[in-house]
Length: 87
Image 1: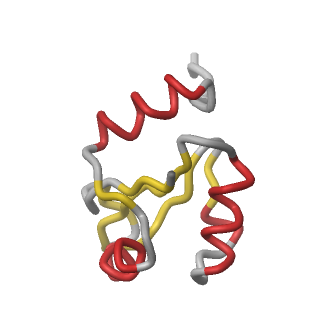
Image 2 (image 1 turned 180 degrees about the vertical axis):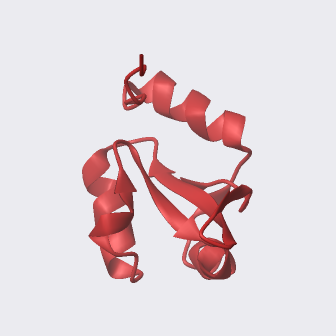
Image 3 (image 1 turned 120 degrees about the vertical axis):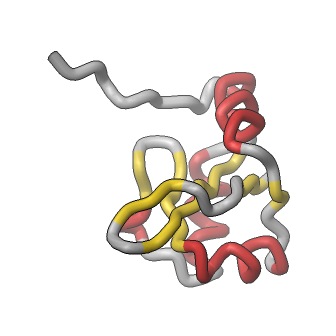
């Protein structure tokens, strides 16, 4: 299933959502490619999606969830790849 959280992360003068699959990275990549999300938006285990794409992603079938639910789904599926800790 493709999941998307609400646009809440500020960066580059806009808000961003996270789009991910709770099934496989391949599913996330296929959905993103089919709906115009560029590969440069991939960040380890999810795509960063600008706020103006949110409604279109939901209309295309992405399931709205909270940020916590998205992370929990990635962890439960064994797909979570957290960023390494910095010194």
